[in-house]
Image (tube, rainbow, N blue to C red; front, side, top):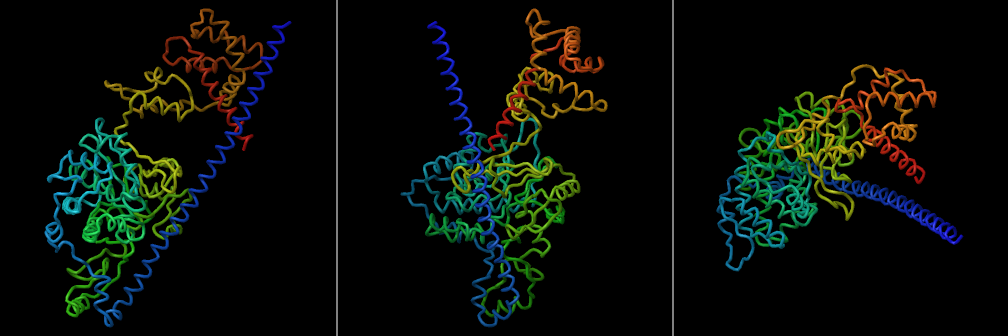
Length: 594
C-alpha cells in the first residue's frame, strides 16, 4: 500500500517535472525565435543606414562631374585653387628618398623593427607586436608601401592561381580594420605560406580601428609570399572613401608627423592592386559582382592604375588647355581621373570606369535581370540569369564575392553559382553577424570533415565514417574525394508512383515493422537475410492488407543491401526514418509556437 502511494507520488512528480521542462522549452524556443527575428531586422536597418551613407558618398561623383564641366571657367578665375583641388601629385616622379630618407627611427623606439628583404620572421614579429597594441614606425610603413607598390606594378589585372591536392586556397572577405578577425583566421587556418595560400578579397580598411595593422600584415605577407598571398581591390581601397569612413582619420591619429606622406603613397598603392583573382580557370573572385555588360577581356587589359577613385568620374579635357594651365600655375593641374590626350592621359575611358564600378559595387539578387543598385547608388543588382550568362561566356563555374555583410558570414545563391563571404564579425554591433572564410581545393576532405558535412546537410544521424567505404572514394592518406559522393546518384528508370507509396507505408508502420523484424532476427545480430526480409514483408502485408508488387519489395531489399553481402542492416534503415520522424515532430512543434 505504501509502495503504491510512493510510486504514484513519483509519477505525479515526474509528470510535473516534464510539464515544467516543456514550458521552459517552449519559452526558450519562442525567445530564440524573437531574438533571431530582432537580429535580422537590426541587420536590415544597419545595412539600410550603411547603404544610404554610401549612396550619398557616390552622389558626390555627380558634384565632381559638375565641377569638371565648369572646369574652364573656374580656372580662369582661380587657377591656383584648381591646381590645389585637382592637382595630380605624380607619385612616380617623386624620389623614394623624399619620403623614407627624411624619416628617422630613434633609439627610443621599442616597437617592431623590420629587416629588408622581409622574411617569415617579420610576419610573426608584426603579429606579436600588434597583439601588444604596438605601433609600427612610419619609416617601416613607408618602406613596406614602396616595396608593395614595386611588386604590384609587375602584376596583371587578374591573378591566375592553381590549386592541387596538397595545396588548397583560402578566400577571405571584408575585414574592415577588425584585426581580431584576421588573427582568428590565422589561428584556425594557419599563417600564409607557400603551402597555405590566401586570397584577400578587398575592403581591408575603414570602419574598424586597426586598418593600418591589417594593411601592414597583409602587405608584409604579400612581400614574403608574392605567389601565395593574393590581394584584390575593394570599393574601400579608395582614398576618397577613406576620408569618410575612418581610415584617413586613423592614419593621421597614429602618425601625426608623417601621416600625410603615408596617405599620399597609399593613394597610389591602391591603384595598383589587382581587381580580381581566377582560381583553376573556374572560380572568379572579385569584390562586388558583375553586370550584363561585364567584359572580362577588357578588364584584363585596361590600365587599372588610372582608376584613382570611383568618385572621380572621367571627363575629357583638351591637352592644349592643360598645357596653358601649366604655364599659368607652374604645374600640370590635371584632375585625378581626368583624361587628356597623348602622354597626359591620366584616366580610364568612361566605359572602362563603369566596368570597374560594376565589379567593385554590384550585389546579387534573386530577381532576374540587371538593374541599378539603388541602395548603394553605384553598380547594379544582378540576377541568376546574368550570373549564368557571364560564367558561361568565359567558361567559369562559380563567382566568389564579398561586399555584403551576412548573418552567418557567408551566403550561397543563384543555384550555388555565387558565394558571398564576409570575414568581419560583429560588423554592425556585438552579435550582429559571424565572420567566415572559404577553403577551395582539389575536392579533398578529411574523413571527419566529410562525415560532419553529411550529417549536418542531410540531417541524418548515421554512422557516416563506417558508411564512407560504400559511399565515397578515399586516397591513400584517408582523404575523401567529395565529388565521388555523387557518382552513383542517378535514376536508372522512371520512378513509379507505387514506389512512393511503398516508402510512405514503411514510414507509417515503422514501429510495427521493427517488432516483426526483431521476431525474425532471432540471434539479435541486427542483420537479416534477403529471404527473411521477404518473409517479414509477407507477414506485414497479410496483416495490414497492403498490396505492393513483389518486384518492388525485391528492388527495395536490394537497395538496402549496401555492401551486397546478401544481408540487410535493417536497424540502420529504420534509424533514418526515426531521424526524419524527429525532425517532422520538431518542425510541427516550431510551427505551433510560431
